[in-house]
Length: 85
Length: 233
Image 1 (cartoon, rainbow over the protein chains, first blue to last red):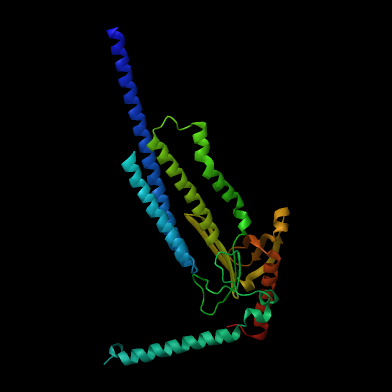
Image 2: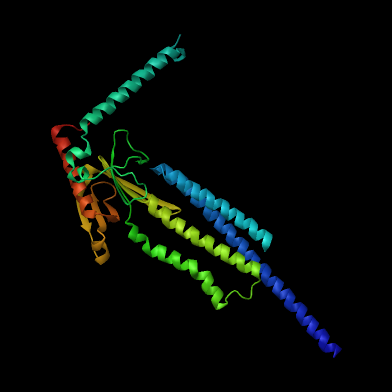
């Protein structure tokens, strides 16, 4: 009886370790994903800057604002992931 | 004292330079007729004020890099909005993907905060996709001026291609309109053969291709006329 309980306890501890390792892996994936997306957002802003000079329209500053807004939101999401995961 | 240190001389010189520049511009303007004077297509069009249009005749507040002071934009074209339909449909389906995966129970093994993070990341990616589609559409333009044609291809976020050809270098213009959708909504492609370094410039899926072809022919004729009448600088 005691042996069974001990064996069950060891199995449960192993499962907990496995589960926490899996969650850590998933957390890492989320953070890498956000980091890559942040780089993508920076490229968007850079590209808008270049294209704004190529095609000059009154709407280009609005597009640039959207690009910067997107970049800020991605940064905030990255921070949120660090806090909640 | 050398003239270099004489500021009054310098001012006079710069004034002369500015005046001569103005004279060159005036001469150039005198050589060029306004597009409405020789183009039947443009006479029928009112100047475009909307900035998110795919067909912008005589746009009021649009300019481009390397534009000469005497060069006037006659027409700015983008791909027909219908060409965005496929991408927008994908984006629309992407909006419902989290709800679908939730119903299937694909992420049920993850804790609540991880599920929330997955949804946030997914919607961020969806927004990024829509933004890229919009930017590619907005910045890929075909510009026709009274001097040349310019093809600005914003192919992807890290690749762009700008090619131009003088109107007098155009050799052949071919209009291609195929399929029910293109015929119904009057859009298609124009292939322009030139004698320049890049032998073909293609205006893809533009609105009113026949009108644009007619305009290009009128511009080519005007160039010929300028040469015959000696109005070329």
